[in-house]
Amino acid sequence: MFFETLKLAIQAIARNTLRSFLTVLGIVIGVGAVIAMVTIGNGTTAKVAADMSKLGSNLLFVRPGQFGPGRASSDAKPFNARDIEALKSQLHSAKAVTPVAQKAVTVIYGTENRITTATGTDNDFFTSQAWPLVRGRIFLPSEIRGGRPVCIVGQTVRAALFGNADGIGQRMRVGSVSCQVIGVLEAKGQSGFGTDQDDVVLMPLRAFQRRIAGNTNIQRIYVSARDGAQTAKVQSDIEWLLRERRHIVGDKEDDFTVRDMRQIAETQTAATTALTGLLAAVAGVSLLVGGIGIMNIMLVSVTERTREIGIRLAIGAEERQVLTQFLVEAVVLSLFGGIAGIAGGLGLAVVASSAMHIPFTVDPVIVLVAFGFSAAVGVVFGYFPARRAARLDPIEALRHE
Image (cartoon, rainbow, N blue to C red; front, side, top):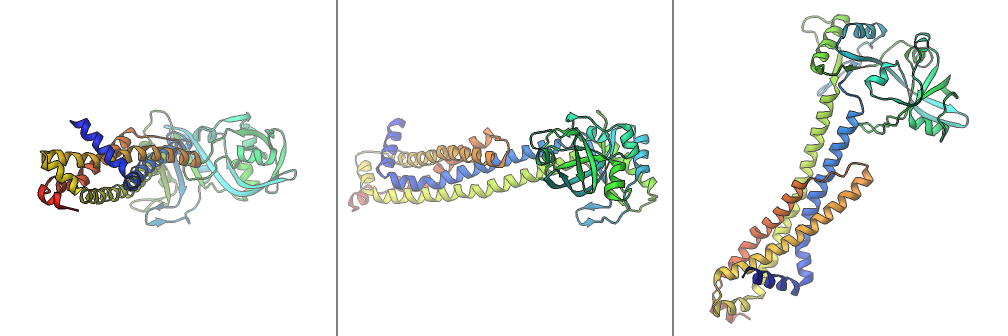
């Protein structure tokens, strides 16, 4: 009985192919948009998490001034070499304490030049950032102490200045300073904040301060906690030590900020997840619009087939059989739309993921939910027209022209 009803429903749909196609188009768009938005959002979230992990494991970020919602100050005094020494000697749960000072400079080699970021630091940088070299070596202790102008370049700078060569042993100009290239960093790509991490030149901190910056300021400190250490405890120790060194007593507010990169990553992930949910909800409105379209067309179909319904009722068809036939037609339309929407949404997500360079991350649950919701739309919005058809008076229906 059911298969006969299904066959009749498919025949009724096939009689008006164009109208049926336009009817399910809303469902196709709704399901496709939901799946595409959620898949793209999941890929973006995965990329953000992966990019944030590139900044290093168990990493804390320290900078002068207060930064956060509703407040921002950058007039606090910068850190200095004595602060770094104190942190390195007293933070026993820290694996690496990295001073960082930066400035935008022009680098030149032969006829090639590029504006990039020069970073003054020490060898702890490679530990805290989990950033190995693919060619050359790190700084020698004598180069760090004596401030010798040597440099390690990122892949973007290497490609811009040296092409396919690694540039090891060559001398290039960093600002007005002649600097020998001693190493090349492994490629890292974009950070979670959208910046090119490979567009960088590293120099010993003292050489950078003397030759590039012209001061002894340290703008940031990266602290990498040892494996097994609680970053919250490390953060508390950093705050206590810096408050003591910067003579901050009592309830006076800190003039520095300590952030846990894991917390930043979680915040970024939560933001992208919330945005994905919002976009999916907006796209889901298309499903409701598609459902209204199905109800409208089914009402038209009932009106057009009033005489047919009257004949079926007159020769003994039960109300529930008529109800089932029209309800099955509505559900079949919705399911066709759901299947097409799933295929279209996944296809769109593949294209978008490739264009945006994010992982293609399919959530089977959302696919099943979207498919089930499309079927539910058929049931909900098809029920009223089906009930109207089933309750037609056979005599009045046979008089209908």
